[in-house]
Length: 68
Image 1 (cartoon, rainbow, N blue to C red):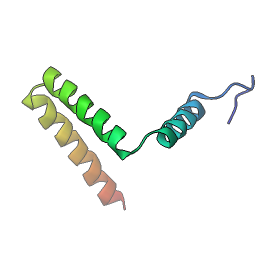
Image 2 (cartoon, rainbow, N blue to C red; image 1 turned 60 degrees about the vertical axis):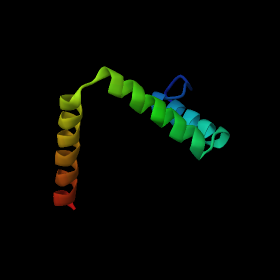
Image 3 (spheres, helix red, strand yellow; image 1 turned 90 degrees about the vertical axis):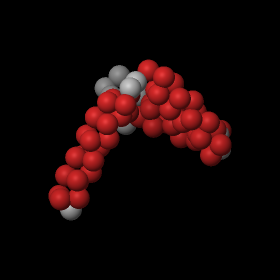
Image 4 (cartoon, one colour; image 1 turned 45 degrees about the vertical axis):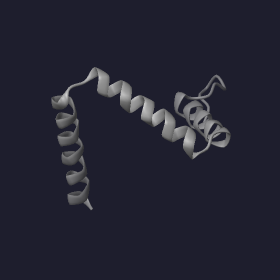
């Protein structure tokens, strides 16, 4: 979808970029960048950080299931 100036929306640009990246990379590429991101995050956060985001994710998922 384009806006009034025939420019691509941020959402559309992101979708197209993701599709192009997916065409150029395989499963191992995504595994490797995920591993690197996880390692970098682990270096910058403590146990409480992961407990908090896990709790938030569990609450969000529980709410999704109750809405179904």
